[in-house]
Image (cartoon, rainbow over all chains, first blue to last red; front, side, top):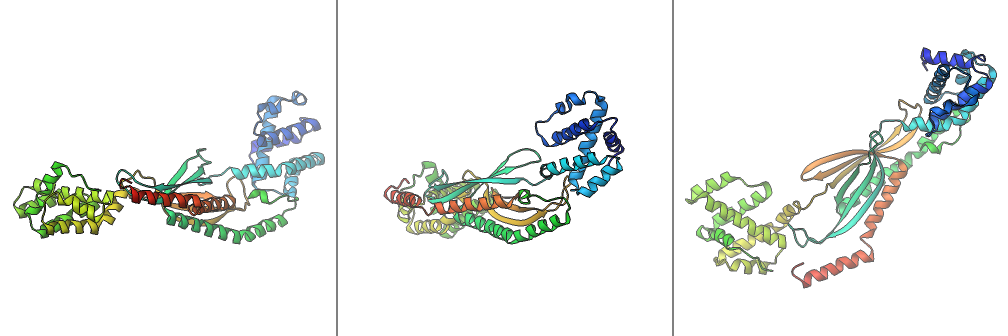
Length: 218
Length: 208
């Protein structure tokens, strides 16, 4: 995990009881987590009476440094010992290290969900709707008498934030083919589910921090 | 149901009895070919020279034949109705027989071609799938995130189109359940009743 000089300097200031007393440290730390995880958070998160005595430039610097470190730690899924040793290197006292680790642990799941949701991905199917019709005639062709389906896939494009729909028609045989193939995929997915769950458990055992729920990742 | 042939159409078709049946058969073949692949004016010139008539005459004859075939196929008229419709043209029995055979031999294919003219939505062609597990991304390492990647092949107006999409296992299950329900719907009493009743209507009214 490589952190810039700017972040390291900010962190070192945070460790200094002269710049931040215990209360201020706790507030700033919580503010950093809140800025990252609370969708409604804004700049007012640093507007606390017990932080007013600190130079706003220093406040912003340390807030940014803490937030950056939290994100990096979350990204690399650091364990408690890595966290502690980095904080020790930055000259944090024991009390502050414990507080940081506790706050980190409390927010770890939300952090990982947030980071996991940021990614480039293919358009994602979210739902399907269908319509069954019986075709009688068109202006080009009379006496058709055949059933037809209109299928619409609701798709979410997280990159562009758009929700295009994909619609297509098919006859009964084609729909049976489509359903057959999807069922095939679904059965294979079920068959391999045991494998992913084993892998998740194996990963969990390597970690030293207590591991909470696994299923939310899916 | 009888075909309603306009005077102009009858005039164009009047060329047919003036040539022998082999030529009419050839015109018939050209007509169907033009329906399949679009018309080619050079063919008219070649035929016109061989028959010593103007290429316009040949063109009208072939086009008249095309219209006769497409209208009959579109309405799916019976053999008897076709014969009665053509009867008014006053052709020889041999020519009438030839035209009827031309109609019966080609109507299925012509109907398929006509169905492609309908307002067209992309239609399903094929589906390929792949199971993936996301292991890491730039923002988060050490992930285990299963996903299903789908390549949907669609056809529209003869163009082949593919869309690559993804979904998660839960949504995949939901898709399968919903579409299975769609298939089941065709077997319900309601749908069977409607189909049956339309068939009954169809046989009692010729406009249907």
